[in-house]
Length: 587
Image (tube, rainbow, N blue to C red; front, top):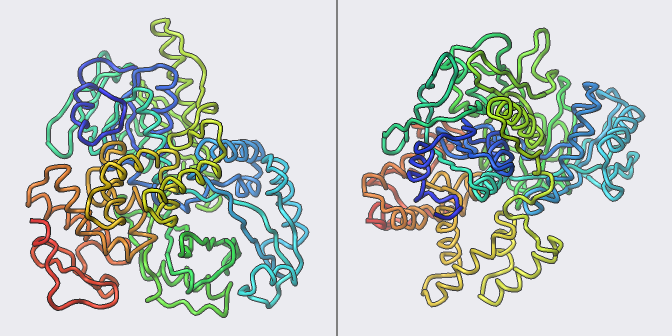
């Protein structure tokens, strides 16, 4: 059995977890759980990981999609965390250059703003020094005229200048999947859509879990020497299953992001600016779009679908209008959006924006290890801390000695450069793509998603070179096959939302490719027509959530019905009267 993260091997992985006692069972398939599985498997531990939904389907696909070096930590006086975050950011850029990309960020400074020009300059220079930022990316300070030359759209009234520095943009969902693939390559057994229903105890110690396959309904007994709760938003619920929910608990805050076409908000670089009320907002260009975020409000509703409210949209649009008065964004300009919850470790007397986001590890009386809080940037260090504890406890129990963490020395899946720079690898693969007739734009899109693994897709496209399909469909087919065989893609939502990001950042493509995606996945995964219909319903609900309407609510924000027998193929500009239904096309 190979080490690919194959959807078609998922049942086998669950059976293998159940067949022998693991060293570590990780509950949770977000970035934290992925990092733990990667670290533990690199040290030679027998590792299993289960996730009740899709990989990265919680907070790990709903962040601001930035790898921060710790400006917020600096404001809170956490100087050690600034240094650590800077190191981790640079390391991630080296380990996964296709997914972690430096981008310029402009921070305008206004009279009567939160901080004055001198204070901002000192803070940014101190941040760069602590974070070890390399020379070419260190902050440059500009006065008013220089700032307006960089970004003419900024509000001019009261403008003093700006700090011009670098942040690192990422695709959080893809980063999680690539780390998960790295864990699988080291032997970790991984299954999405597999939920821990209850724990198994011996002598008051947790020794295993009942894991239910959410697709087949079958339940497996999985035994492990150490069990780690890395479920993020659901960490307290898992602690309740262990009867160990005591002491500090989690506080959820909601962060909403909106996506508009770049032509509607044509900023020249990303910006991070004050808004009335004391918060700060990002606007970030990406793939022909600009996304705006984030809100930061205490949330107490359902964790699965926090949603985007009219108030959320109004708050973010008002913030943009205040910062860029010549930009006249309307509700109808919003093409997509997402809402994510941050699980913060509650600190009495502090509001959500004041809590640093530090991680916290708790070991229950039964031995369950829970890791909570933390930031995307620090996932590798969080994992190292958890696995260090597990290794120490395993050594105390049976004398087995495991080596120290090595994830700071190995590339993440897709980041294997084999002596080349990333730019050289990209140029080489673009040339190979051209030889197959693949346009550079398509190749660059593949590179940003798959990095060095793009070579595998090129092999698939070359093997299908005699096909009469368009190049776009041939590339799509290769992507779907690869994502099913190597990224545990099981649903159309998995592919269109988390593996490619098209639902959020390329709405026309997502709409245009619904039928072929469903058809190809049906053929590859052998779906029944009943399953096809269910997949369409899941996709419709997700599209409505991404475009601003609650699941099941047919509103003007989601004008294209996409369900069951009455699904119609609709051009993004004009509906054709005689369009065939998707159901008819894929029967």
